[in-house]
Amino acid sequence: MSDSSSGSSWLERLGKVFSDEPESREDLVESLREAHNEGIIDADALLMIQGVLQVSEARVRDIMVPRPQIELIDATEPLDEILEEMLESSHSRYPVIEDTKIVGILLAKDVFRAVVKGQLQSKEDLQAIYREPVFVPESKRLNVLLRDFKESRNHMALVVDEYGELAGLVTIEDVIEQIVGDIEDEHDEEENDNIQKRAGEIYSVNAITPLDEFNGFFNLDIDEDLSETLGGYMAVQFGHVPAVDEEFVVDKLVIRVTKASERRAELFEVRPLKEDEAEQAVEQAI
Image 1 (cartoon, one colour):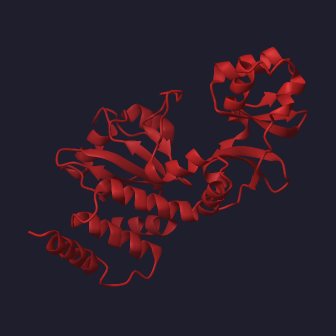
Image 2 (tube, one colour):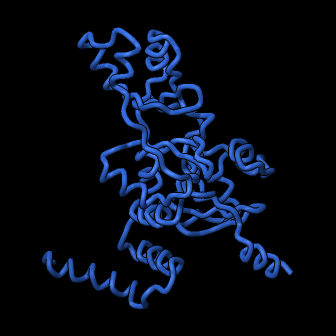
Image 3 (cartoon, one colour):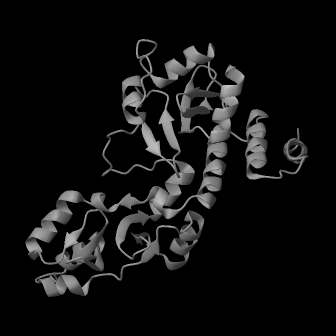
C-alpha cells in the first residue's frame, strides 16, 4: 500500500468519526473517544487532547501550590542560613519574603553562578540578583497563563487572591502536567505517586493503587477483601477486563478507564458525580 493511499484511508476514517459536527464540548470528547475506539488515535493522544480541553476550562486556583506548601526565603535571615535552606530543598526558584511582602525571586542558577564567581559575600550581593516577581490572579484561566509563560519566558508566577494576598504559586510545569500527566524529576518525592491531581476536582489514578490508599485518599469504604488494588476491584465490578471509557460509580465518585491493554486496566480518571448523573442513577435504581 502506498503512503498516499494509507494517508487517504486515515483521513477517511477521521472524517467518518467527525461526520456529524460536534455541537458541544461533550460531543467533541465523545467523538475523540470514538476516534480512539476506531484506532485513529491511541490512549496517550486521547489523554493529552482531553488535558488540553481541561486546561482551557480550569483556572489557576485549581492547580496552584497553596501558600502553606511554598518554600519561602526569609530576607531577614543570615546569608549562610538562606544558602543552607536552598541547598537542602533543591528547588530551582524561591520567592523571597520580607515581613509579609514578596520582594523578589531567587533563581538557584543565579545564586550558584554568583557563588562560583565569588560575587556572593553579603546580603546586598544576594539582593542584587533578585528577579522581579510575577503575580497572577487565582481566577486566571490556565490556557491564558500558559500563553503568558511562553511570551514572557517566565516559568513561575505567584498567585494572589481577590484581596491581593499571596494565595499560592504556579509554574509552567504545573500547567503542562495537566496535559501530559505527571512530570517527575530527580528531586520529586515518590510519595503518593499513584494519585495525581489534575484540573479542578479531577484525579488521575494508577490501576495498581492499593485499595486502602484509594479509600483513605477519597474517604471511601470499599471492601478491601475484594481485591488488593483499584484495577482488580474494577475488574471484579465489571466482570471482565475494563475497556477505555467504561465507567463505574462508587459512592459519589465516577471512576472511568482512561488507559487499558488487552489484559488489564492501567489508568483511571476519578471525578465527582454530577447532580444530573446522580438523579439519573437514582431513577435507574427505582
